[in-house]
Image (tube, rainbow, N blue to C red; front, side, top):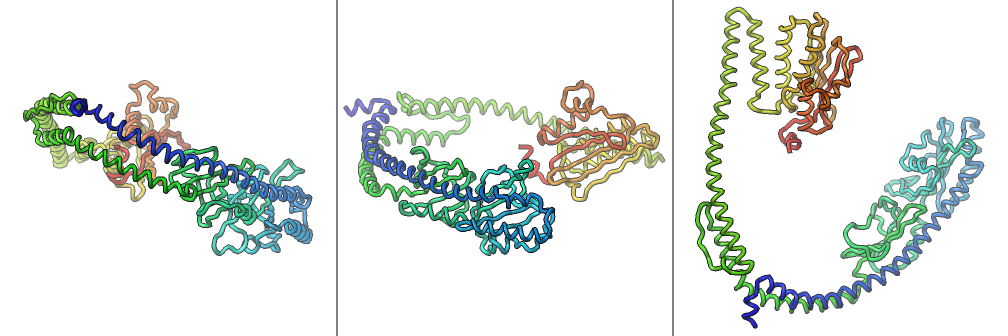
Length: 591
């Protein structure tokens, strides 16, 4: 029997062991002893707590309804509606109406404080009214009903009740918050325009009284939160926000369970809030932990059996695998490997040996191919080094022509040769694609000097650069094509009246480069847009299309060229780039 088992494939042996000695016993013990007990306890307790939570939340809603009903009564009264136009009242009338409103609010302020915020265009007429820094309730006068976030939300709610956690009125040395029910008061006689906001504050006392009336397991916490998870009222005064964790599973409707806690919650449709119970599972499971310890003891016995089986596997599996690992460490490319008998085994060990030998044979072949590739690479490097001699020879030749022009008494020719040499050096940049703004402007100035001589100084140019941007990085030769267009199509033949402006400045994280001219030709924006988007004739506008695409391919579609018609005539083009001051910042876009 043992020999028959030993002759089976490794996979069959492992599957047989797992089924007979692990899966069946552990499944029976843990499923019947652990999962079922835990599940039953959680289900029963979860159902009971869910019903308790629902009833508790209904009680809290009734408390809120009572407060809200008082708000509706207050905002519907004729006295509150009279505040629609405070310009019609004299100082004495305003004072009398203020006292009457204060008395009205005081009448309702028993379990909660009620306040009224009145919009007025003349706040100086109400110097007798205290501010919220000295009074926790009453009538307050403000010029703008959106002066505070919670007031602005109340205005947007269009008269509906809104529950918010706001700064406590009155003296507030510790920064404690208060829960408020807010409604915007609409002018019932003039189309429902908001004229004031009525607020009920410190209703957390009422809510906490109802929440504390229930009994929960030890160490449980209770929270009433808004839709964003902000704690309105809770048993933990330190918690400002509370949300149910994402990890876990739903046990019942409105009952969520994680590894350590059970969360029972209920949502209120009327006030868009949520009542949450957070209950530690340890407080629920009780004696079930003792059962778990018994199960773990039994599991240890099974693990001992597994250990004995692993000793058997060590002889038939681990030793051949160790030998295979030794073979992999001793392998050298191009070297023939020693063959072992495990290669002939009809199981996974034999498959591993055969795959390893096949891999070494393929690697040996790749080594030979790599040797040939390295020879070709060396040849390519030699050709590249030879090609680099050509621009170096060109620079030396131009330098010789420059000094020949100086000595020969033709300084203008010498200057043109020098500018041409500068353009070539920066344009090639030793193969660099990214250069500094300083280098790019040297290239542009050299080009402008050449064009000045060509067009007999028929135009002027101005360059303005914001201090601190000279060392910003950008793709090379992106300004020169735009300057060339301005000269060819705008100011090249304006007999001294043409002007060109180049302006460079940074705005937050964006580098803006503008090229403007006062050319007499009208700009065809539709044609330029077609060139930039690639819908125009590919033989036209190659220069600006090349610049636009190079920028977008490197930095994204948020950057590139934008063309505008100047107010005083001519054309303006803006280059939009990210502000890049180091190779580390550039690497983000290269990646």
